[in-house]
Length: 99
Image (tube, rainbow, N blue to C red):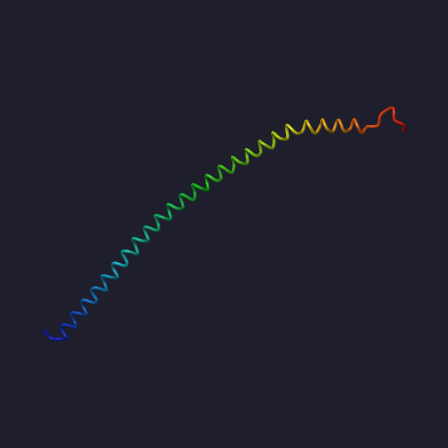
């Protein structure tokens, strides 16, 4: 065997190994793309689930606060009216005071 045959064989081996390396890189890139797509889908589903939970809980909180405010108004309003009545009776001019 001569040197030129050895160099040509070495070049073919180098090219073949490069092709195999590129193919492996492409396969790995596709695998990673699939993994990322699956993870993205999973994350999006979880985000949507959390968003839905927050919306539901937020609506429940608004309803609860609204109910508490209505209850407070219902209890405070009669007291305010009673106090107003008492203040008016105290501040109203009496018949016996000089005018």
